[in-house]
Image (cartoon, rainbow over the protein chains, first blue to last red):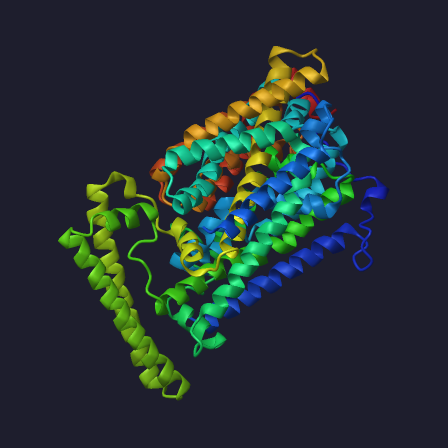
Length: 51
Length: 569
């Protein structure tokens, strides 16, 4: 192995998302997950209702 | 196609290509040619990532998948949001910090040259083959529209893409992809609206969904734990996460897209844009196919959507057996139409039992029609070997050509071309970059000028374009294009992902252990693929898990002082 793996925390300036309602990346990721769960929920309703 | 269609088609495609060449004129540096100008905003990065994945196959074949199989195919994308979050949080910061041209440079930096070359080879092999399929898809459109020979169409359209990509490089790919996506969205939304308008006047929105649901076309989520079922919630969420993680995180055609972002923030937001939009986008494309299915329950469909089969039928009208199939199919459809009217009447009149009985009759007639289609297909395949392609790839284009007005046809064909150009250009660009940076610069000529490497990269891009054309000539043998692309990726991506997972997360494993583990794992995936009947979505998980576990085990047996020492640096 030539170098150690580079999993390190990012620089502080890179942690700013620039988004007013989602100021940190963790909140952005959470928002994406919630959106996904809502979509799956809607698809389950669609599947059950019209099957 | 009318003159208006040609004006829309040629105007939009040439306009974007000329704009791309004009925007990137006079830029000769290796960095700019391979990575763009590194000033790209998040929205352009997001569209570029989306356009690279969404090839002409997506827009041509996916509605056909919806027509034949319903919404179930959507489950393949269930792993995408999680995968993109992992890439944004872990992969992207590392790639940016190391300022790499290709993802495989990182493997060389972390392990050794042989592991770097292995990762790059796996990419070149699977992407080189997959590139053939993305040339084949728009060629179907052209061959159908103009009646040209398919092989000649593949070669000529492939050459157009090669010229476009070789001239532009990475930046041209990025600057043109947003306009290409605009054409694609405009075309698909227009097709969707016109299709809804063409559905029978008495058919309400709920009727449409009930009808589609009755034919099992709205079964979007399947919680079955049977690993042999291709698309389930679990195969999509678990297997799909590994497939998407491998595709977006280790495939150079995607890595190159988000590395063109002006900053880490722009790259991350571009990825999150895809994490939010991909599932809704695919849902509407599949729903388009489902609505075409409903439309053809009222409108007489052709016996075959496949152009080769339709042409053969048209040329052999005197064949009594074939003519009988067509006549029977048409009369079954007339019967279905009558039964559907009864169903609608009973449904709107509130007579539930009559509606249920009428719909059972509709399903029965539909089944009879499908049997006739299957028998006719068997007969035709026996007499004409060129008729093996799946009907699914022809459903949408047949609908467009037969049902949509002039001008819109040109827009849709332009959308297919835009999709083909955008994804193909990104793929060829990545193949050329990887061959130049990871092989040529690493093995053949380390100390040359940037101008030399740009020229070499252009030659390699053209070379891979020709390989893709060669493979495209045999693409008609595959079952269904959109599935074939994903199956091909599933076979190779798992091991590629395994290499990167070990690199990122298991510091004590060295190059030799991971190299041999990857080779063994790839062999295992090949063996399993040909001997195990499970959904292809599980292979990325199997490949990456095997590679990671074997690496750790093998490292324990290797007492190479250099490797064990590196685990602590």
